Length: 89
Image 1 (cartoon, rainbow, N blue to C red):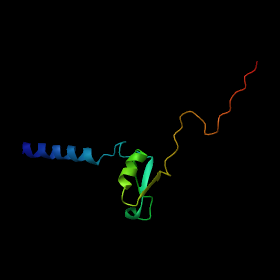
Image 2: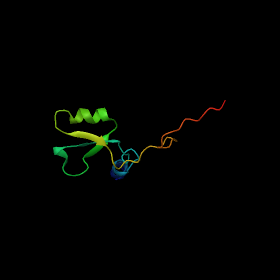
Image 3: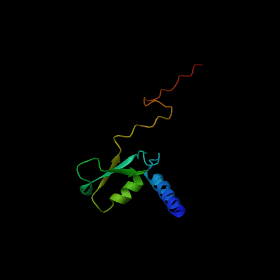
Image 4: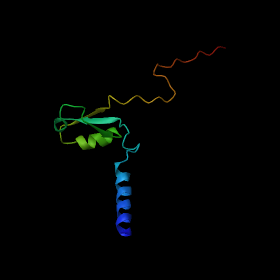
């Protein structure tokens, strides 16, 4: 009976690990692929780089594009063009 309860506890512990969502699963990727094999939707947005996407699209007639649902990264800089400050002599 003890072996059965230990096995049941191990099973519950193992399955709870796989069913729990982690931050890695919820991440957004910056590059998407679209083509005939991806239907009418957004395609497959699971690429970190344009090069990865282009390698997957190569020879298949698919194309890569920036993920339209990904918020632009803000690195502390504004998107407005910067002006040079005038130097006074």
